[in-house]
Length: 245
Image (cartoon, rainbow, N blue to C red; front, top):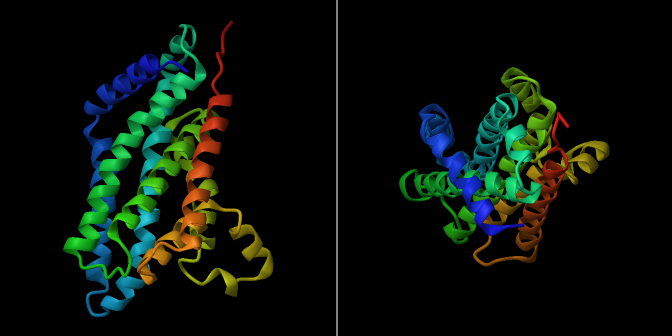
């Protein structure tokens, strides 16, 4: 992998996103808006917001980054940009790393805004360090980026890219422990939830919510989310191929 080519790819993606204010608004503002709305939906029961706010702080960045990344990458594929790039002396690893770096930078901004809003403005009561919340939120956003890059290879249009959301995101949302503890689910559903990365994202957020120090479970959860992001990025690189000789 060539560092200069990776940085050049990331810079090109960021230049294109700069001219797409709707995508930037979706990435940066929508998670904050959802958290703000959630806080005042439970205005009469602040304990409820404390219980689920940390979990959603990890889920919202994953969902928004998945949507934006999958659609933006699909545009690159359908417009022929990826085809032209692959015809150049640019390695797949350089290309995927460049995309991940560009969207990862936006993920850092998004996670920082959402975490700061939840903790210092909306009053999310966190026993542990807010910086650990930020770490998990960032890992979740990077996972959403990786998933978006991966599924874009299997969609022929932006509409199809959005249709992958029910297949990829909704099962994780239902089984991650947000609605009911995972250990109270049917054994088959609990077993499925144990292999879904969003489950570990929610568990990691809950560890920060309840424990003042870094626990072994938190380290495990963070490593699982990070490992899944790296694995999906590798799978995304495998889907990059030229359609013409």
